[in-house]
Image (cartoon, rainbow over all chains, first blue to last red; front, side, top):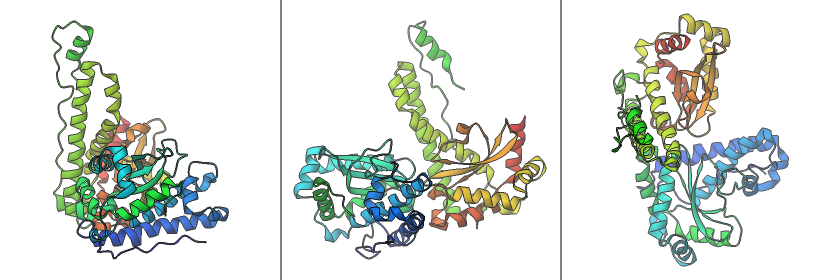
Length: 218
Length: 223
C-alpha cells in the first residue's frame, strides 16, 4: 500500500500569525509531498518493506532490516514522512487548545520542574540544533520525559542509530529553515517562541498516553 | 597569529602573573565585493543582505565568542572545556571560512566570463564541457540532505579537480582538498526566492559564478 500525504487537520491559514499560511502550504504540499513521493519510489523497489508500515520503517533505520541500497533514502524520506505527519497534528489554531493539563502536565512538572522550565530546555534544544533538524519531547523507556534534538529527518524512533537518544515522541518542532524562513528569516528563536502559541496540547496529551502504553502515536 | 608566548610562559610557571593576551584578534565581517543587489535576478538582493549581514555575521560573532572562551580555557588548562568548545568552533569557524570564500566566488552577471587557461583545461579533461561539469556539480549538490555545500576542490596530490559535498558548515579543508568554488545549499541561501526548488537556484547561480576568482584560487593552489 502506497504512503499518502495526510491532509492537514486545519486550513493553511489557521496557525497565523505564528506560522504563516504560505509556509504551511509549501511545507505541506511541496516538502512533505516530496518525502512521500521519494519514500514510495524507494518502497516500490523493495516491496518487502511495504508491509512494515511507517512507524516500523522508522524503527528499522540503522538496523540490517533495511537493505544497504535503500537505507539512506528510507532514513531521510521515511523519517521526513513520519516527522511531518506527526508535526501537523501537534499544532492547531490557538482557540482550539487549553494548554497543558492532566497527566502530561504532571509528567512535565515531574521531569522538568515546571512547564516553563520544560519550554526553556526545549527552546535551547531547538535553537541549538546546528543546520537542519528537529527538537523533540519524548517518553523514554523508563517513562520519564526528555528533550533532545536530531539532525535532518532523524527522530527518536530511530533507536538503532549510533547517537540515538531514543524514545517515543509526544511533541516535536521542525527547525529546518524551510519551516520558518519566509516569515522569520534568520530569527529562529522568534519562530520557536511564537510556535508555542499553536501547540495542540490535547494531541500532546493523547501522544503521551499512547507513549506511556508503549505505542507510537501517528 | 596566535599570541601563544604569554600563555606559554604562564604554563611553564615562569611568570608570576600570567599575562592573558587574546589568542587571536577578533574576526571581522568582510565586505562584499559588490552591492547586495548586484547578483539580481539570479540571487535576490534581499537574500544577499540577510545572508551576509545576518547569517555570516552570526557565524563570526559566535566564532569570536568561542575563541575567547577557548583562550580562557587554554589559560586555565581546562581541557574538558577546550573539548566542549570544538563543535562551536567547527560550526561557526566553518561557517565563516565557507562564506568568506563564497562571496568572492560570485560576481555580477555582466562581469561573467567562462573559465580559461589551466582551469578550463582541467574541467574539459575531466568533464568534457563546462555544461557537463555544471550539470554534474548541480546534481550532486542538489542531493545534499539538509544543510550543506557543494565544492569544487583541487587535489594537490593527483593534480585533479574533484566535486565534493559536505554537510552543515564542514569546510572543504577537512578533506585535504583546496577549495576553489563553493555553492551554499542551506535553505537560507535560496528559499526566499526559489522556495523548495533547490535545482532552480542551482541552475541560476552559474550565471554569477566568478570563474576568474576560481582560476586565481587554482593558481595559488598549484604553487
